[in-house]
Picture (cartoon, protein in one colour):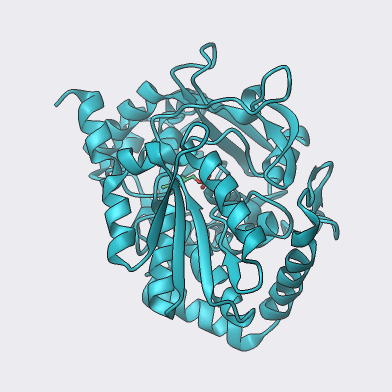
Length: 399
Ligand SMILES: *Cc1c(COP(=O)(O)O)cnc(C)c1O
């Protein structure tokens, strides 16, 4: 059965069921419409697709491998585990897949100036990278807390020629950086394209970011067919905004594969220091979309926490809210400590040091593997590499 036959989301208004949509100031309606129209023009344009394919291949290093994790498989002695290696993409994470697609869009729209928000810095680095490659001016909004804990990525962006703008409002992390980027966009709409880094924000962003990221799942589908002659039983991915997860899930929706998203439980979901949005949030409107949201009784967005800056976000992509309600995917959470343990486990068993975000997906294997059998197959999406997190990992493990 082809996955996409009965799954056509979002609808023409950008709604995934009751989620998604376009909750934005009047001034953004026309530019969002223009973005959507240009996007649909481009994906039907042969030369655009050829250029994106070529960049993915020659610049980014795609396809990324699907690695059989024999060490980890032996360790659990249950289902076979494969790793989709987005950590091997140029710049070290899946973010470049989206940044490349959107920079081509920006060029087509005739924009001269690019803005972006970043948490861990990975999306900032990916955006600064494509701006350098295409000669566009780049401004990256980043919370002061993240600037401190991801100083190496801040330097990378600067070296690539981008300007990093510190954000001192709110919790000084990703949500606040996103607010500032939206403010900039509203002010400078005529010459500026906003490269959103995940499947969040107003329509058409959740749709177009998903489509650029779905190359992960399309490749995995072909690779697992080649390796095993069939689809996997489970796919596991971490969920911050949800772009790496939907990227690998999307081509497998309705194909019988169990799709599992893993959120950050921080210090634990019984504390108020976590960002398990789908586990504990409820419907709200945030940054242009209707989606699950961590909020207090008055509807104020909660302060959130994760050891991994890339998951430290109180919202989630609207499509994941839909997938949860429709039980098309299941969502769980693991704590900071579990993610740190999983980082060490993957490093020791596979010689792969994952990003702390990706380590959340690995950590969930502790719960999943005992329920699997030897004739089953699990694919885990390794969304990025751990270089940016080495200081945090070192301090947590007390080396
Ligand atoms: C940004 C990031 C994430 C979280 O973003 P999603 O949109 O949920 O994928 C996960 N892993 C890595 C390595 C990242 O850089």
